[in-house]
Length: 582
Ligand code: ARG
Image (cartoon, rainbow, N blue to C red; front, side, top):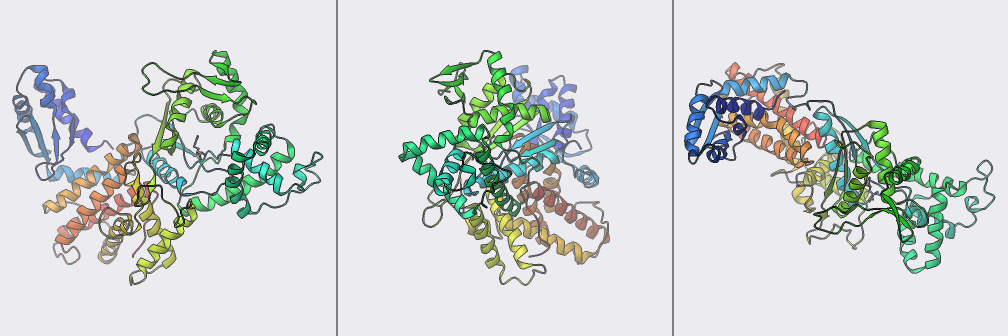
């Protein structure tokens, strides 16, 4: 279905044209002052320079043509040259009825088929998910669902960190602690030797320990470097131990992701790009891009006009081992071959901005993807404590993601303790409300900005919170259940409150497009909140269930039902589950 502002833009552009002006001036946007009008067009202001005419004159010309249009209840030219538009109720109603019957609920579908790969999550083997992994997972999941809702084919790939320096350190430390394990012996034979089971607690503790140790102990550092080379050469004992560690890691991160309703189509890791490394080196060499610098192999990616220094990208280290950038470049070859994507999007915190600038420039220079393929990185800000510093545990340590989820669920459970309304499993309801609070608290911010983790605020029933949205849905559930009417019809709008709700619903589809284009689920949050608050006002002003006029009652129920469908769809794209009652 075509979005509302697009339809209006077409009508207004035509009026500009009929007056002899450039139709491109007819862009219509939602008004910032809904109390004055619903939509506005500022084209006459830009037209003034073009036609050497006062903007108000242009606006008046166009308004004269527009006043013939029956879809508008009010069109006026306002100084210095704005065109203010308010829709006729009938038009709004038929738009909403069309949206209600549309399988996509009025969400505009992308015009030509498009494939998007979204690289998010980014967990690492042998490191438990911590709070720094939260945003990539939940923003990425939301963008994946939003892109699907707009008709795109989307592949979510977790891109496990599993093949670089950290795994050399981890395995080298295992060797120090368990020198007797058969995988470390020269005569290791996988058919005969069994590697002991990996203890998850030890695994989680080993990497930070080894990383700190390598800074003080040059011998250990050298040993771990050799171990990465052995791993990347798939030396049997080292490689088999790595596989065991990876299995335990994957199991553990899957558990945390599933608590967040986050899932991936591909569980690939850096190691899966390994088979494309030779091709990468060949292609970079063929193009004459690769050269030696201090023993390493690098590609220049600086461009004229750069405001900061963009250093060459290191593709191979001096010991010929592959690093983070190698994996990203090789993975681009893999994605191009497997999916032929129109876009590849990456989500990490913004400290990796430079890395992605280097990778994208190198990939484009080398032609690893066609010119038209969009490579885009969303670098997001941090979740902080009240002091503005990254959120920590009470004793100042890094908080594990599972601990954060426990905390949020427990707080939601506490809050619901005295509620008489919950009919289902209390723990499950608390889980859903807690996750909704956490996600909405995060996603309602501009992704690039830091935000403060404020659980009391996130769980509040008032204001722009996930809790408020779930509560609104349960309110509608209860009305519709009591009303027990199978297919109510929206036939009229009886008050300004309803008009505002109807307008918010009609604009819902646009927020999906905006969320996708700006990589900003906050646009969905904004739309959901605007709909929910307009619904609350409508609900307060009217006695829906006791209304005696069947047409009015039916209209109100239809509006309530559409409100619920749109809220549920918006929340689903934020990967927030609703609850029946609370
Ligand atoms: N594992 C990485 C990290 O923890 C994030 C991976 C992001 N994706 C990518 N293609 N580089 O920082």
